[in-house]
Length: 269
Image (spheres, rainbow, N blue to C red):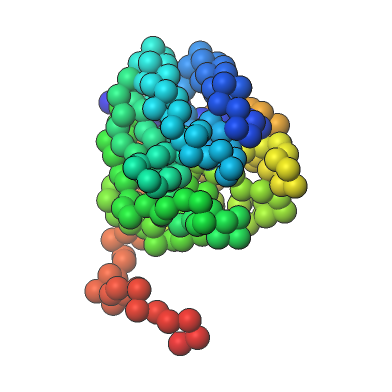
């Protein structure tokens, strides 16, 4: 496997509840990216349906058909594709990021942190485990949208060997400054690549600003989207990541024996 790989973050206006339209948008973008040599692409959060809460269970029942399309498409295009979809498991619904690697499912991650201000915790169940998985594009770590505010998750993914962390999102205005700051922080503090794909367009009262990004282990923005449908792409060089970790040996200089477990913190202490 080459140390460098072309990666992309795909953003498009997710059509609420319209799986057919969203599939067409995703497929068109992926085919265009493959012509540019892209091997790993990240799609937005809940990209097949959006947060259509009244019909979410019905839409989740169609997710196996959506993933079947992605399996066939990634096999045809020789690509790895990551994106979050509504998933039904018995009587529970999850916001789940699927990893499709050249025709096979390489893993799935259920969103750990549900965004209560948008009532996500009312309609969906939270996941209970992290995911780092080996693919033909490298060792990937997974997170979804609101997870970005929880650095412990990203550190765990990095400690488990994630070289590229993929983040599907629906991050709305007016919080784009936080989006940019947190993405840079997560990349810098973990010295790994970060590929973040955001929604764009308007959904009811919410406006999504796009600005999908690919960041280097130094926190450099290698590629960034605007506010409309597009797919910024860039070269991610794992050899460069390894060299930078030697140049700034933050991993060697960690003091985990001092930090201990961090879950004993209590607000106001």
